[in-house]
Image (tube, rainbow, N blue to C red; front, side, top):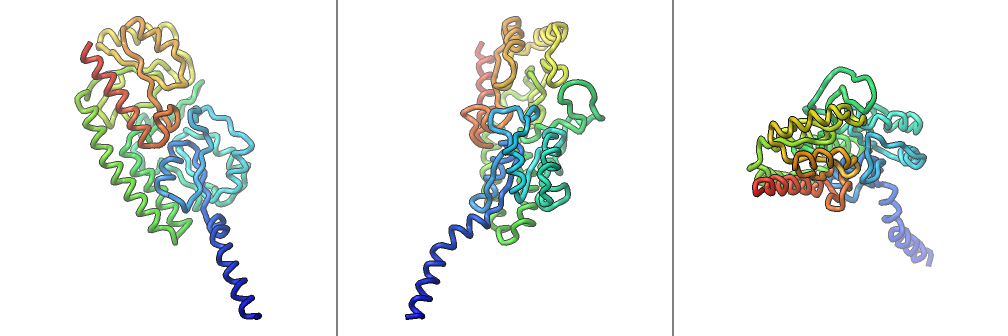
Length: 307
């Protein structure tokens, strides 16, 4: 009877333990943005709980951290940031969280920008607005950079979870295979419009424009976060007429007033693009983000050609 009771206890323990143990064994990764979270989910799968500090549709550069963000970091095994002066607010959060696993140089600290060929690198910027002397931080909008971002993540995951290294590697390879196929589709969609010029509200699009050989001819914001002057708008209007620019790009959260003014005076079309996952309903993940932007641009250029 004692043996049967012991066996019954062991069976009950085995049935009850896996779910609880699995929940405890899962790594907890906190990304600063939905873009990094989407890429992390593609690589991590079920072995890691991934969350984003910045909610979808919010401006990550202007984000104001909340108390729940601090609690999330205190319980995290890893943090993944954009870097390049983009999510500077994270530094203060990390200091307050006092989680040694997430400190710079610790195994759980992941800077996704490592090995990225940055654009617009300048000296330290001063003055109003969120300027980036270290380089343009919107590098995830070049789909080729997703390979580097996920490579940085894979390296960190292998340190944090050696038994899961092959799992993460397999998932990343599957992601890269899908990315390669989609990149071919995206290249073909925008190939007819290489060299075409456009105006953007903010300089989010340098990496996307470089990848698809588009020409960013000007920006409505002279300095990020600072509204344009009437003189600057007049200068942009002259540029649009001289270069026959018929497309203006803005994000959903950016003001429509100035883009609308330029469109009404020039006859250009305003194209709303998403610079981040979740900024529009059509962009629930990384593939949806790039797919939507490519299709929107191709449609706008195509319509221009018919007019």
